[in-house]
Image (cartoon, rainbow, N blue to C red; front, top):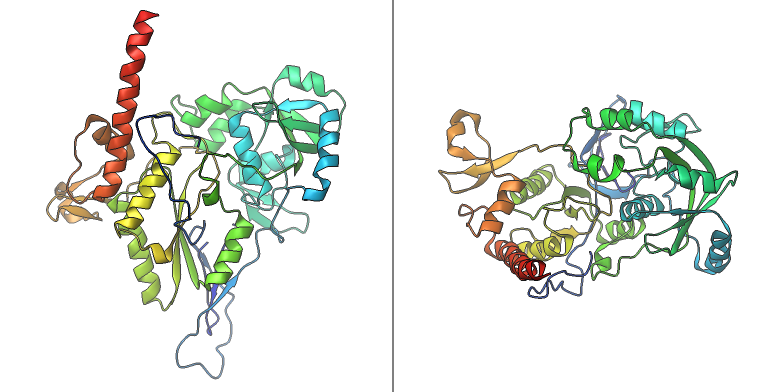
Length: 422
């Protein structure tokens, strides 16, 4: 990952932790104008140092110092064209054969251009694609290997391939036709959809949202190359101030002198089971001797299923969670992760304890006392107006969801008579 923090002890040990405008006229999805965050993404990773001879003298207690480790592959990727060069690059892009991007393709341009997929510098060419697909990693020119478990590719149809012809470069245009980027030194190769699906998800069974929405209707070819993005990707949905780039987040890490960063990525509203995991992680880090562990609450901002809660509503719900004190605003950053969602199946860690009437870690010795409430079940509660068990979610956060589904039902009710009359 490009945003890990390396927590450095005096002893030779290292620990790394690694919308759109509202569619509802009857529901106010105001987001506070100032950010409610202080940080960004990472996953837990433990580094095993080489065995070293113990130093002769030790400090009385380990001294923790904060320092950012290098991004995967070296320098942090930033593929946005400098402002002074954008005019000339745009003129060049206009002269090139065009590839029209979908909304989800644009989200991947965003991911690649800011370094979220470091060290990737464009849509994958075939050698990168096959390495990612079969080995979950990429071997770099210097021989080092970095994690890359998800292929990031751009599909085109036969007509577009024909239009590109022998050109070495293409212009990338958004869904509305606006030029977004240049893809240089391109390579076009076969899009073997069945292999891609089987290797990525471990199944070709129907019902996978990303597969049905993106891969099956996509073209039969993939095009890879080096990206030059003409300007930063913006959505103008009132949420762009939450979309901090890796570069911005690294500066914020340094500014706050965080000695540990831990992240929670989700596509659902935050319930108290999520909060249990986050608060327990912070407690454990403090017990380990860290002084300033910071939580990155990292809601997914890209493609989600049609029945998922929209991003603007989720961001307001997250704000209420902080306002209600379920998470500490002083040690939490809420920042949007721009990637589309791939949906690989649920893994439940915490459950509702029906005896204690709160979210708790599952105890197998009294399994009958626990109720697992999935995201689908949570959304069903809110949609039908049924209250969840006490202690499942903070009241302010639950109210946001209820209002959203009430407004959705009201909108559907007004559309039905119009459909009948037409």
